[in-house]
Length: 295
Image 1 (spheres, rainbow, N blue to C red):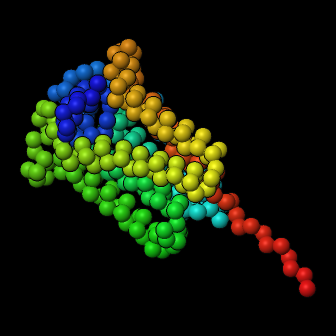
Image 2 (image 1 turned 135 degrees about the vertical axis):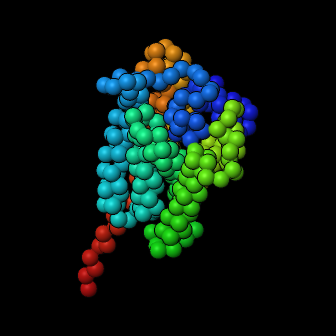
Image 3 (image 1 turned 90 degrees about the horizontal axis):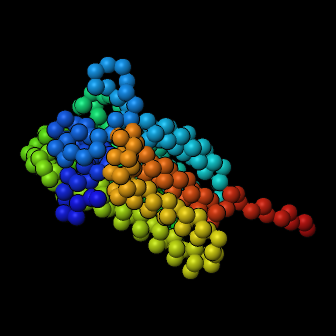
């Protein structure tokens, strides 16, 4: 199981496949001083070449296609509250899925290139979970949704998370400065990445669920959408359990063929899809048709 020592990634990287491990490894891949089960997947032609996480790659590819279709479906819901903000969230998840293919997919990439995709992946996770939280606030209509101001605040804040957290990951991996120099040594301690990549995204997800619970029960007075919300929360939680708790048992049990990251990709994809259906269930598809007035 993952380490309980705040800021340390050594045990996490030993037990599962994470994009941050590519940044913290001296060889910029999932092989580090932490040991543990090595994810090998399928062997490719050439010396010591393999496609380590084929399942996650395929699932991420499916997620990309489905997410694009959800973005297009959202466009047709012209009267839906938070339509543009939901589309921005889906674009964030789209970026996560693309980066995931090249970060934890264990592609035979150049090590320096893998660091870039891993940094994008890490930054995109931070930004996308923030966007989910923003979508939870949008439902209360504290300001008009879909306006230039609303979108500027939504996209601008998300870009700040993407660029800021992404830079921390890049600086850690490339060692541009000495700020995070010790992170590449056991126990691979990085408070900045621990907070922005692990803790805060979880906080934003919990806040979203709480905000939507209050919105649906207290404001809308409905119960059916709670089935979607509960399913999304459960799916997300199951994915995290597979990734951080069950993963080493899966990896050892399959001799490195797969690990928990495959199921984390699957259940996160399901959670995002169900979140969209939850949002769709509490919004209108189109403006109501006004009855014709006769003199």
